[in-house]
Image (cartoon, rainbow, N blue to C red; front, top):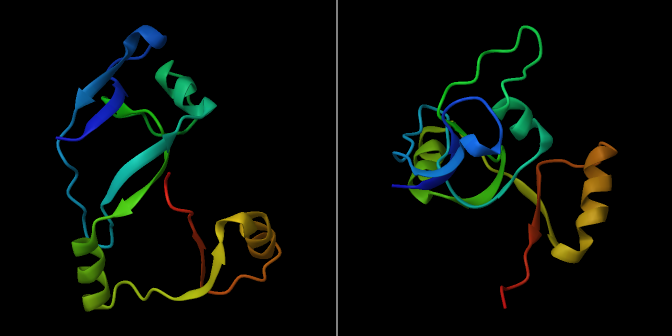
Length: 124
């Protein structure tokens, strides 16, 4: 079972804890990602405290902290999406990681076509 950092009721930091959750099952058009890093932002603690904008849907509990994530796409899901035509990946640029600022500026300026991939340096 995947380990997640969750809260199962609203409140302060005392409601946060680690929990084993069932592995998600992707639906049509979804990808399954093995998360290796997650970013926790102010919206996470705001939701944990029970705050939400007017008209926003209620938070389903238990809720997982860390809405931004990076990881590895589980290949079987991608293969199935490509096979059925639901996903047509097009990588148009592969840049070294140190060129990330230029890649972001190009996409922000509307100059990005397809996907830009940054090659990560090997882990030490």
